[in-house]
Amino acid sequence: MRKFLKWGGVALLVLVVILGAVALWKKDDIARLLAVNSLFSEEKIVKNFSHMDEMFYNEPLVLPEGEASPLEPNPMDMPDLSQWVKDRTVTGLVVLKDGQLVHESYYQGTADTDRRISWSVAKSFLSALMGIVLAEGDIASIGDQVTKYAPSLKGSAYEGATIRNVLNMASGVHFDEDYLDFNSDINKMGRVLALGGSMDEFAAGITERDRAPGEAWQYVSIDTHVLGMVIRGATGRSIKELMVEKLLTPLGLEADPYYLTDGNGVAFVLGGLNMRTRDYARLGQLFLQYGVWNGAQLVPADWVLASTENSAPNTPEGVGYGFQWWLPTDGDEGEYFARGIYGQYIYVNPTKGVVIALNAADRDFTKPGANQQNIDMFRAIANRVSGG
Image (cartoon, rainbow, N blue to C red; front, side, top):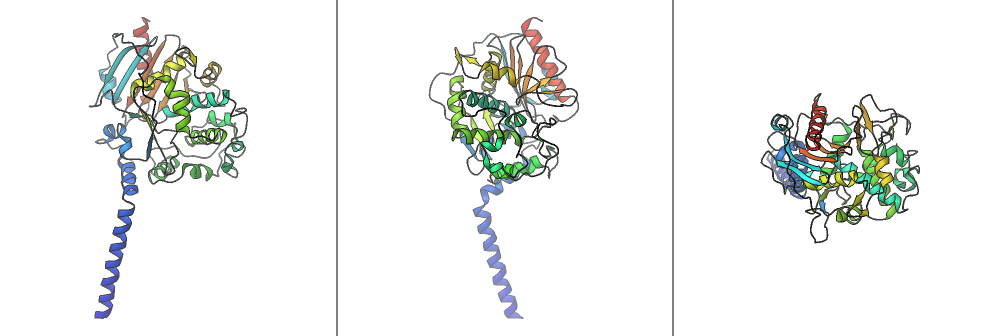
């Protein structure tokens, strides 16, 4: 009996040592997983959204040294923002009118230098890059199947889907986007990202479809990762390299952005871009100017127009969608916007010459009326600064 207890004690000690070694070996992964689980908690969300690089794998998008493209200040009166800022937990607001900076404000203890998480606003940046790559001839047509450029998707639910289908969020793949369900596909994907797994393998592992490609719109975030796979396969280059060279350097950003990445260094293109609020506004201004910046055509004008037309098939009533851009169906201004969870937006109103970049930490963003309250405020701001 004593011998048994002795060996049992030794075995327990060995187990404790092994578990301790594993915990030390995996401490960063464990920390990232814990960060995911508390990322949106009330007491941490504001700080987390400005410091994502402290919790996840990331890569800087290093820009050449130089002056940022100017946003000439021209302060204008705003509607009363106080209740809206409180309701939607706004952290950063930038308003441009005809390219001039007419309003800028920051809240919840944040600053203008914070590099804030884009969430799905990043999708619209990738769409812009797709337009550039297409114009340069690396991709022959958005009618091509995604497997032509991303062969690892053969045998997955994406086989048979075209680039256009995926741009329109009409891939037909089965994907549960419920952010509040721990076991949803979007949250499983988040854990893959946090633990350093492969996003490419995650996408290729999706085998179920809800419908045929191109049949109907359904918001599926992993579709945007597939677009990234297509661009990388077509060019043989990383999204980070292409984004820096083709889009962000010419835009003249104020600070180096960064991408969250998976464990292989692959950019989290569907939601992992982090930059200053003013720099988000610069993309909106680029689109307002039909892809022209400082006299150069960065994004083809026809791509800007195609991206911001309501082209997705069979969208639900009240929803309009183009190539990774949203379109309000109740507006008559030709307005469109990029949108990310928890209250991230780039709103563009071509008729009034207004661009609005919004960052927030809105834990109630899924509640009925939250999105509409934001759109209503954007319209009120656009009317005020344009004298409408």
